[in-house]
Amino acid sequence: MKTITVPTSRTYLVKVGSGLLSTLGAEAAAVSKASRVCIVSDSNVWPLYGKAAQESLQCAGFQPVSYVFPAGEASKNGETYLSLLNFLAESHLTRSDLLVALGGGVVGDLAGFAAATYLRGIDFIQVPTTLLAAVDSSVGGKTAIDLPAGKNLAGAFCQPALVLCDIDTLHTLPEDIFRDGCAEIIKYAILFSPELFTLLAQTGLDFPREEVISRCVELKRDVVTEDEFDRGLRMLLNLGHTFGHGVEAQSGFTVSHGKAVAIGTAIMARAAASRGLCSSADAEQMLSLLKLFGLPTSTEYAANQLVQSALSDKKRSADTVNLIVPYTIGDCRALPTPVSDLQSFLEAGL
Ligand code: NAD
Ligand code: GLY
Image 1 (cartoon, rainbow, N blue to C red):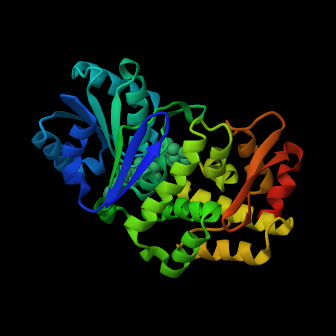
Image 2: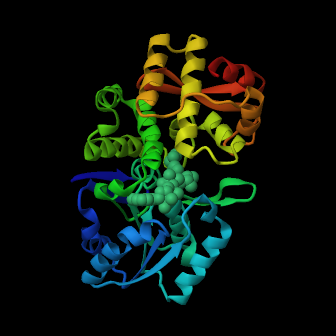
């Protein structure tokens, strides 16, 4: 097992290893004086891991209740959120009680936002069961739900009390969803770590789970420790996301987030090379790694369609968009790009 300390406004541990779900109760007791615990999960994850989570909490003396909602992004909305808050109130959870988010990023974001707001904030533990949640969404304290106007438009920064990542739960992930998480792992390698990049190029999909997940968590930890509230450095984590969001939106969300990020990263690599910001050899290596992991690197959508989506991104400021550009593997920088130049930048990467 690897343990990573995240020293943000609240300091917490991220534990990554095999068999950790059975330790949930003992780990929860170490960080919380709760008597009641609400396990929040979705309709795919609960049948697989709900019982183990419940039993572990019971053995440690907690009284667990559970709230399970239909799996999928469509549930990450105001209706599920309010229904969960009502369930917490009806279950008489108090301010000293605890939420456990057992699932992928949808569960983590929704449960985290409920924890951030129920009774003006109660503690929660993230138990990520997708690769994406393990390396990204469970760490760093961004919680949110979607609004009809867009994704993640209502949310809060709220750090968990603990993140417990049992890598055994990844065995039941459909391969396609596993690959989505791989796009985020490749993102960390391109952003910060030539060593991780080389390792991934050697192992492909057979990368050592505990080592790579914990390395990604360390890399994210370093970013969120310096910029917890997303005012500067943290924007680097959006590598591949600006145009990736465009692909996701244009497809009506039939292209998954991970695949869209892979396409967005490929666009940035090609555009950076075409503009002389990155060597062609480096860009080619980035594209090859995405392909090695079975991820897509191109899109059928036209530049003007993708630009429209980029312009409606909530992170846009004034007349510029911060594009995250790979200069080389391990060195990416935000490039404030005038809106008027966005389309030609994108065209260079298509
Ligand atoms: P998800 O939570 O929808 O999980 C994907 C699918 O896998 C679901 O059908 C789920 O039921 C299933 N699943 C989960 N764990 C499983 C397991 N172990 N075995 C079998 N099936 C399992 O999606 P995701 O990709 O984990 O997360 C995407 C969400 O994360 C998006 O809403 C995105 O906005 C959010 N996100 C948040 C942050 C953040 O910093 N808070 C960062 C990135 C993404
Ligand atoms: N996933 C981006 C962030 O946490 O900032």
